[in-house]
Image 1 (cartoon, rainbow, N blue to C red):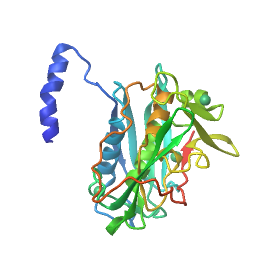
Image 2: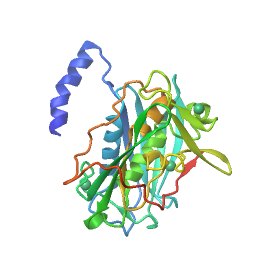
Image 3: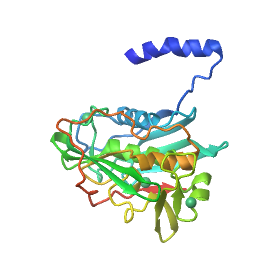
Image 4: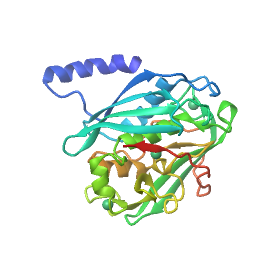
Length: 282
Ligand SMILES: [Ca+2]
Ligand SMILES: [Ca+2]
Ligand SMILES: [Zn+2]
């Protein structure tokens, strides 16, 4: 509220001057309802967590682009599902998407009441890998969960993953299919870490909209979300969607989340096993 009040006069000035007010990526989120799973832990709620996840991605791109995401709870089976509703423009991007989160109880979600901070996780790990364009951050993972988060699937991480699909990494997205048809996303010359090749996972139906966890071994958001951990966008996640969706002004280390107490980056730690599967509807 405070930030809004400060920002409002600036927006008005921009309107008066005829400057478009969308000066960066804007993710409009619309809650369509549904019941939260009865076995969820934590005092948070889905709309607040989606808003926090949207801010994290918005901080990564300064391009004036707006996308609308409808979201809610439903018995969808997988922890989260993303469906592209509308796409278009040049460069081609998703315009409207639908993201549903499973309320069957199977995911055993943690609903963070403070989704802008990571105090529930005692450990943060950053991982780097050279995929042809120099060493690039490929993972930002929090572990060592305590309290209500312990042993739970972090809903914030799942939301970040599903919004990652909406921002480009989606098999129904025409730009993604064009880029991914050869099995990899190549980061182009206008972007940092140009020449980086991101191999995509495939299954019996072909290329999927996920990074190949066998080659990007540390746990990018777009590899999938494991149980009992938090993942926030790595530089690689941000680069992949920039390449697919034509974002040009990037922040590869958005400072959207406060560091947990006693955190330290280290070279140890691997992605937890037990990756949550996710279906991208066509
Ligand atoms: Ca928190
Ligand atoms: Ca390619
Ligand atoms: Zn997915």
